[in-house]
Amino acid sequence: MKTNQEIFFAIPKGRIQKQILPIFEQIGIVIDAEFYNPETRKLIFDTNHNDIKIVQTRSFDVATFIASGKVDIGICGLDVIEEFPSKSLLRLKNLDIGKCRLSLAGKNNFETSDFNTHLKIATKYPTLTNNKIKKKGYQVETFKLNGAIELASHLGMADFIVDLVSTGNTLKANNLEEKEVLMQISSYLIANKNSYQTKHKRIQELIEKFDTQINAKN
Image (cartoon, rainbow, N blue to C red; front, top):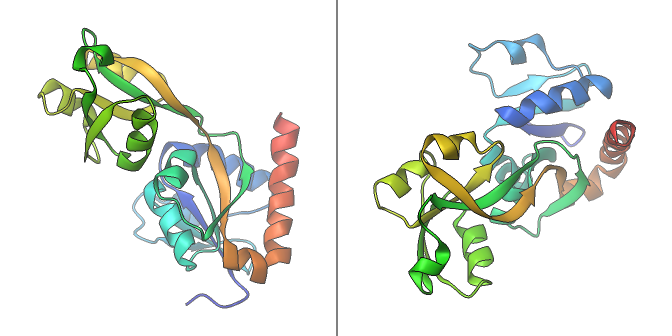
């Protein structure tokens, strides 16, 4: 159980984590060796700081855990922050890592102008999609998929998809193309608003260490 003195720090699994771990080393946070065991089932890990625990979870869940107040601070993409807005979240620092873009994509011979004012879109980001596309004057019907979003276009389930794009290779492999960039994405250091007040000194120390590393890189 978390004590009042402990800082629970959530980091996402996957691609972004590979960019986060070197920063942790540079700011002096060493995670328990069990964290690096691919067979481990643990989700919470000790560090070389008695008051810092690392929580490893899905990117989409980082913001949810922090908003709940059960986790104090963490790192996640701007896409997640915008998709699940919460008054309990504070954006502390753009870490300038995990860069990609949220884009509208579709079949090579499809254009939004072919569909009058109604678009059917498959996405992991229904909130962002509705907000971004409606501003362009379209009526949007979204349905949520958590994976294999490109398949929805091939099967005729959607006119277009909205998803994160980095290299664009996945789109090309599935005969799709990027139609429009809706939003530039990078990863942010975020905190629970209450935790930031009650554990301000310790969290501020961590922010300053991240600042030093990000500024040095830039």
